[in-house]
Image 1 (spheres, one colour):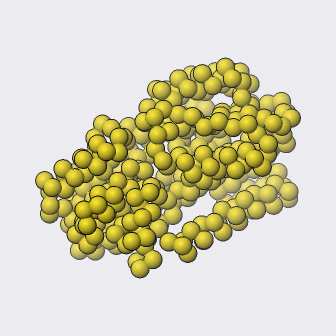
Image 2: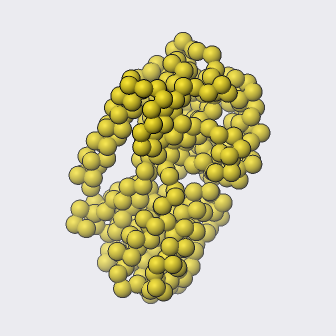
Image 3: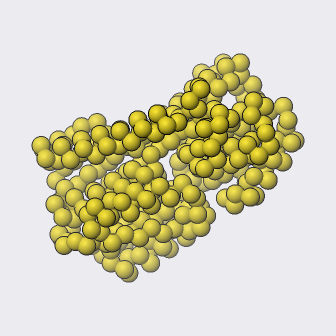
Length: 332
C-alpha cells in the first residue's frame, strides 16, 4: 500500500509538471491524455483578476469519495488565490444537483465545475443557462457521452472505455477456478456505474468461458451506509456458498467493513471501485483482493488550475484522464 501510494504521488507530480512544461513550450501541442489549445470562441470569457470564484457541484456529496476531490480543490484554490465552494445533494440525485447548478448561476461564479452522472438531457438546460450567463462550465468525475456531444466541455475524470476489462481480469485473477459471484450496485442510474457493470458483464461473457457466473446484482434504492451494510449481511447469510461479492462504485468499501467486522477473511472474497475507508483498512490487513482507484484528488485539483489558465491566460485544457489504477494488498 505504502509503495503504491508513493508511486501514485510521483505520477501526479509528473503529470502536473508535464502540463506546465507543455504549456510553456507550445499552446497547441497535444500529448497523451492532456490537450492544450488556445481558448475557443465559445469558451473565451473575459479575463478576471484574482481572486476568482469556482463552484464545484457533485451528484452525491454525502459520499466520502468526494472528500479527496474537495481537498484537491482546496489545495489548488490556495495556489491560485481562488474563492472555492464544494456542494451537492446528500445522496445520489441528479435532479437535486441540477437545482443546485441553477441556484449557483445567481452567485455569478467565474467557473462552475459539475459532474454529468444521470441522464444527459437533464443537464442541458442548466448548463446552457450558465454559459449564457457568461460562466465557464467544466465537468469532473463523470461525463455522459451524449451530453458531451450536445455541449462539449472540458472533462477531468476517469476514462471508462476499458474499465470493465480491467475489473474482469482482476476477478479472474482473484478467483482463478471460477465460481458464482454477486455484484453490489448501490447507485443504479449513475452513468459510470452502469457502464462499469455492463462492460464487466460483457467481458466475462466473451472471455470467461462460463467459469464465472454473476448470480445476483444487488441494487438497493439507498446510499445510506447502515442500510447497505444490512443488505450485504442479509444477502451473504442467505447465500453462504457465494464465492465473492464485488462492487462497482464507492460504496464497495462497505463490503470490506462487513468482512472485517465478521472475521470473514479467507471465507468471502471482495473487491471493487474506489478507495473508501473500508477498502483502505482491508487492503492494509489483506482481506480486500483489489480496489480500482481513479485518483479523486486530481479531479478536484486540475479543474481549478485549468480554470485559472482559462480565465487568466486564455488557455483551454480539454481533457485529463485520471486513470484506473489497480491497488492490491502488499502480499498480493
